[in-house]
Length: 465
Ligand code: FAD
Image (cartoon, rainbow, N blue to C red; front, side):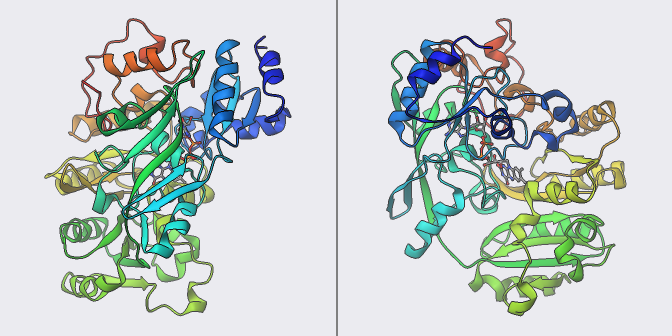
C-alpha cells in the first residue's frame, strides 16, 4: 500500500473520493480486454482511489497533494481506450474527469470546453448554431473530448479532415503539470504535439478549443458488393470524389456484416461485403449517380427508409472504426483486430495482396482517410486469433509487405507505434512530471534510461525533432 494515500485522502477530504474497491476497480478499467494479449497482462490492474474533481482548481489540488506524497495519478475520461491507455499500472489515484464537462464558449468555427465533456454533448450544444466537430471517434456517445485527444487518433470525419495528428484539428489545450506548484500551460500550434496521444503521461488537459465545421443531418448509406475488393475499389474511387461530401467511408468484408451487424442483418446477404457511408443530404443525388455508374447496390439509405424500419438501427458510424470489432466481439469473443496503414498510392495493390495472403483468417475492414493530403485507407481487419505467436507473425508479414502496423496489443506509447518519443518529448516530461507520477509505465523512454530513440517507424504522431 502506498503510504502517501492516507495523507492525500486527508488533504482532499472535501472532494468527491471513492474508495470502494469494487467501484475503484470498475473505474480503473478501460477496453484493454479488446486484445487477448493485453487481457492477460492487465486484468488485475486497479487504482486505489478515484477522485472526481469538478473544477480546474480541484484538479490542481489533486496534483499538488499527489506530488507531495508521491502518489501516481492516471487520468480517466470515459475509459473507452482500447490499448489499456487508462489502466493505472502503478495504482494510486484515478483522476476521473467526467464532471469537468462544461461547454464554455461557442464561436464561428470554434468551441471551448472542459476536457471531460462528452463528444456528443459538444455537438448537441453547437448544432443549434449549425456547427459540429470535424472529427469524432466511433465512441461518439460515450467518450470525452480530452480522452480523444490524449488517447485517440481520428475516426468519423477523417475522410474529410485527416486525423488529430494533423495541424489545425485541435486549436489549443490547457494543460496542468504535475509539480509541487502545478503550472497551467496554454498549448497551441506545434506544442500541442507534446500532449496529443500522450496518454496523459505529461500533463492533465483540463480545457480544449476545437475547430468546428458546418453541421448536416448526415445520411447513413450501406452499399453491398459481391467481393471485398469490389467494395474496396468502389470506396477508393469514391474517396477521390472531392465534390461528394462524406463524413465516413468504410469497407467491411463478408461475412462480418451479416454475421456481426445483427440489427442490419435484414439488409445483407451472408456473402456480401459492404461499404458504409455518411453522406451530406445534398450530396445524395450525386452519390446515387456515382453508385449507379459503378454498379454498387445501395442496400440501405436512411433518407428513403421508413421511420419504423429505422427504429432500433444503430447509426452506421457504430458499425465502423473500432465498433466493427466491438460488434464482432459480442458475437464471437475469440476474435481481435489489427491497425494497418496501406500507404498511398499503392493502397489497393497492398490491400489486394494482404487479402489474398490471409483470406478468412483476417476478414478485411478498411477506413478511408485523408492522410497528408491524399486519400488512402487504414485497415482494421478482424483477426481470427489463434495465438500470440501467430499474431506477431501476421504483423511481421504486413510490415515486410510495406504495410506498417500500429500494434493495438501493446500498452506503451512506443510499442503501439503511433507516437514517437524523442529527446524533446522526454525533456517535456522531465519538466511537466519530474517525479514520473503521471500514468506510470506507459512511456518506455522515461522508464528505461538506455532507451534507443533511433527507431524510425512511420509513427502516426511524429516526434518533436
Ligand atoms: P480514456 O479511455 O478515459 O483515456 C484515454 C487516454 O487518455 C488515457 O491514457 C487517459 O489517461 C488519457 N486521458 C484522458 N483524459 C485526459 C485528459 N483530460 N488529460 C490528459 N490525459 C487524459 N479511437 C479513435 O481515435 N477513433 C475511433 O473511431 C475509435 N473508436 C473506438 C470504438 C470502440 C468501440 C472503442 C472501445 C474504442 C474506440 N476508440 C477510438 C478508442 C477510444 O474510444 C478513443 O480514444 C476515445 O476518444 C477515448 O476517450 P475516453 O474519454 O474514453 O478516454
